[in-house]
Image 1 (cartoon, rainbow, N blue to C red):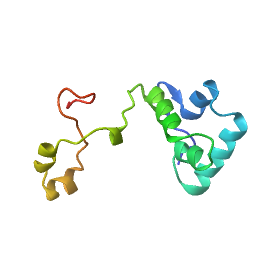
Image 2 (cartoon, rainbow, N blue to C red; image 1 turned 60 degrees about the horizontal axis):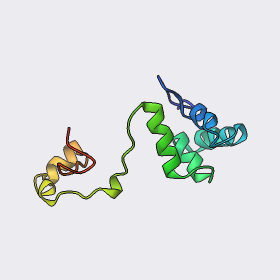
Image 3 (spheres, rainbow, N blue to C red; image 1 turned 180 degrees about the vertical axis):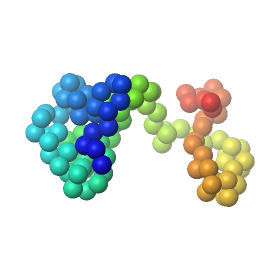
Image 4 (cartoon, rainbow, N blue to C red; image 1 turned 135 degrees about the horizontal axis):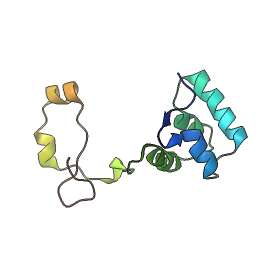
Length: 107
């Protein structure tokens, strides 16, 4: 497993350093934790108490150039849930989508 995922927007650790959210020592500790526990860097940073989930999500959003969406804050339309069979859900693992007019719309 590589130490950090790199995209066209930079490595996660570099982004967090640039934002001043972590220091070099914390990054090194998190990279060691990541390697020892076979987890993602963001997970290591949260588990070690250096960052919270929101901070990691914001940095990942910047890294990938995508808007961050907290799916836990969205309501799932019961009509949409009824359209997905158990077999379909197990096979395709569909993503949650909000009703039209909410902050998250279907693609």
